[in-house]
Amino acid sequence: MNINPNFAVLASRRMIFNTPICDLGWSGTLSFVNDLANMPVGQTVIAFLNANNANYMMVDPEYRAVLSHQLVLPDGIGMDLASQVMHGDRFPANLNGTDFVPALLTYMDIPKRIGLIGGRSDVLATAAENFRKHAPWHEFIAVSDGFFDKSDSAGVIAEIEQQDLDILIVGMGTPIQEKWVHNNIRPEHARLVVTVGALFDFVSGTVPRAPMVVRRLRLEWLYRMWQEPTRLWKRYVLGIPQFMRHVLRHRSGGRDVAVRPTVIRLSVMKSEIPAANDEQTPRKASRR
Image (cartoon, rainbow, N blue to C red; front, side):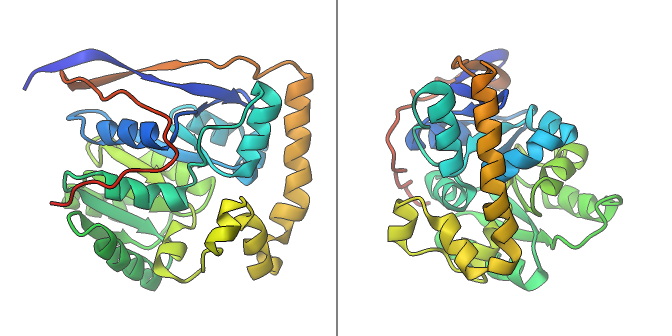
């Protein structure tokens, strides 16, 4: 195996709240993440930043520091608004985890062992079964529900080590999931780790998705608040004005103006990584 430890992958990013956010389109991001998952060494952790998560980040230095070690993808209309104000244009694609992860599983044609952590046991089991129907060439393992002691995860980590995973998908809510992964998951546990919030609820059908027309209008957040007003009203009624204050403060402060590409150093096999493009729709992968 011919390994080059100094191979450089150029990940196009732009700064939002002084945090680098990936600004590739759909096709470019899928190709990039697929290449990362196939590397023989190292580890990439993917997180998603939306308006609600950004509000957490602005008051939680530990969460911000954790995100600085991860590949952050833009999630939702809030990130587009922030990018429009700070950079003059929105992100090429809305890469929310609910849509991106199923698309990535379809895109990846090399079979993977994929571990799932988070949610209730019944929800996790149903999500794993639905993932198997969605991408049957991968193997999905329900490692653990999300109701374990986060301060003593030895049992869960031991189970992960037994499973010999390629990919780990963790859905325990922000910022708990990002911090837990940062503190507990090592490269030998999985080459690619994705933190996904409530994805298992959607994949299992426990929480319904908004109709497609609502999603295309970028109003799924409004649909979710209508579905669960008691739980979500603070996130949107109070959180949206708070988020916009952060956006305007950063813009008036003259920060986050330049688009800054970031070079990620990775150890990979000497093969050319496909050139990314900015198509907005993911392609289907061939099934094996």
